[in-house]
Image (cartoon, rainbow, N blue to C red; front, side):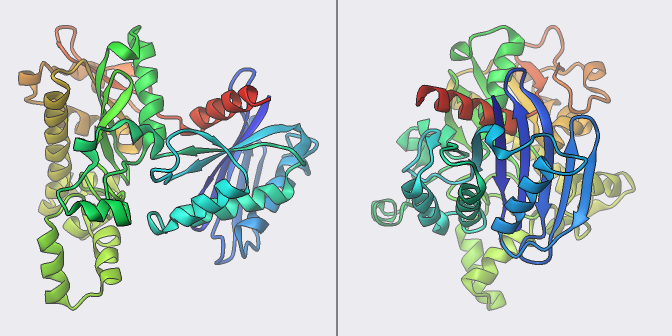
Length: 401
């Protein structure tokens, strides 16, 4: 069974074609600059590439080009789209309507679009991609939506509610939803497998760290709390996002700086975080280099992230009444041995002790990095959201045959 996985952004459409007989990647690529020109980069399993500028006024044209490079030319990997058994889509926000992977029909597409108010940057492009996909697929090819928020639907009410008048939740659906759920679900299960344990017996803190970061408490394979909230702005400091901020600081700055709500949102989402603190970059690699060369603000940005991760690990160990493992994933989590070392330093009170040699120079590989006498295991677990989406898609399609 060949499954195409689609991850649509506001101006991009990333994809992977997988052969589910052995879960190998046949081809992958990205259509970007949609609406502002267009470019596609496509790579096959045997190293053939397409790298060219195109005209992508909308996601429809991008999807048509995706079909073209998959089926024609030197980098073709299938003869026609009829070879694709199903298409799995990553959808960021399912609200309270979608708590599980779902077969897509017109009503589902509309419901995803209707949730765009909660995720304006993501959900409308998802709906556009679903409609574009439907137009070019062979008739009857199923589409499946895998929701980032779904993994967090197991959070108890005491964890997802805010201390605001209850009508804010009833009328406007204001609550913690959580994000990166597809990644957290994949890596927590991969960790359980690597440990040789049943995930139902484990208490895990999963640290997905990248340009966007979130920490999740996973108890018995279920999310019981997570750092991101109503939007992906909440939680730890990120590339350009502030993370958790006193709401009164927001209204205070709005008045002081004469900012509209929209401008304030841009200030917190696009001008804060590593970029806002350091004044240098939103990229952790740039921040680390600058800190090594003595830049105090860059050093501060890094210290803030490490401090906040420690706080979440400690608080989540408390709410789960114990901790079996901590895992690091995502671009920063998988590749920054310095960050992992700093986070795990002085955590003996929780039973965390790092093996410095195992941690050093480790980049993007599954590995245990805790010391042999550490009561809590620490791991690096590379994430693979596309594979999980493909697995979900295969499972639900086979069940609905």
